[in-house]
Amino acid sequence: FSPECPSSSGKPNHADILLINLQYVSEVEIINDRTETPPPLASLNVSKLASKARTEKEEKLSQAYAISAGVSLEGQQLFQTIHKTIKDCKWQEKNIVVMEEVVITPPYQVENCKGKEGSALSHVRKIVEKHFRDVESQKILQRSQAQQPQKEAALSS
Image (tube, rainbow, N blue to C red; front, side):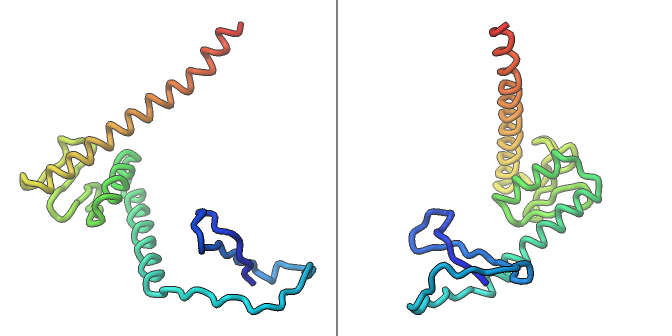
């Protein structure tokens, strides 16, 4: 059973479909009966869905590998950041290998990016640089938010 709801994305001509396992339903009450024929369901692109599922599985396995290999949280986060931009990246023990050209070794800083000088190495270095700038900005923001209640408490006493 799958009732339709307006799209949570807000897109017109789209709908969310809720899947309900009828084995867990004990009672159904019909409020009003529909007489018109429902519109045909949109066709699903099964190969696209299968491809997406395969990609998701590979990403989860890669993440599990990194955890089991003892990769630091910073290394895992950097890998995910790079992977958003460049899909061709993988783990080789504790090293991140990007486009088979650039290797990033622990502790995963800009100076740990090694490879043949060129656009690939330069591009990866820029991604690593931006990643750590963003992480630092996030830490500063979190610290300032954590200090805000303390300042307010000090002012009110």
